[in-house]
Image (cartoon, rainbow, N blue to C red):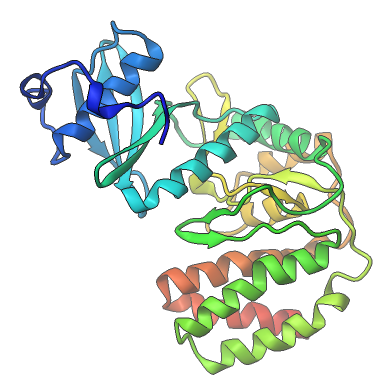
Length: 318
């Protein structure tokens, strides 16, 4: 629990907090904790005046908090999701240190039964030509920074709602096999997604040394979940990314995912190559990298993602 969030000590009365617009069904102690988090971290004059629910994905409930002209974005879930929020905070701060614009973390904490993450609100629109190019350049610059000599991360985190292991490896092929594909196949087995998926998966794992033979990418900090729904632009045109699943890996995993689930504008890729060339063989590796996300979607949602994963594996095996 964050020491900055002693929810039991907030000073505004329960009656006063209950009168804040529509408390949107949240417990009064949680509304009070959010109010306290704003005032404790940013000044007593920022009094919570209203809050309303907004779309925030399929994992957490999301709210915009209005505080005398300042706005904040809160994610709320059961207390059992506390580690999701600590992982997100860790990822956002890592990206910020690497020079990428992200929503800044104001506070995170727990109340009885709930966990929350409070961020500065950013009014985002879709990427256009200039902002997409800027994001490409920013991502390439981040990928070029020194990230050490190994692949992994100092902690486990999450890819969507799925736990993501990040054990350290000296070899990239072993990292991708053991920390990415194998865990998803094991989860698919537990989810009874079919024998065909397991048969193809076993064959694919045997082929890993050949599939990534000679590929020893420079370790790079990666966003890890960079699809079009996790990026946007401010009115100023400054690009922003959010909802990371960071680790140190092959920069191409971010590029590959930008081509999945809708894709990014062409200007994004033009901006990227202005800073860093794309290595030969990327097109052959791309389906192997995107297989991880398709398998994760198969495990989360089933349906057509199972068939898509099987097609990708068949493609890689031929």
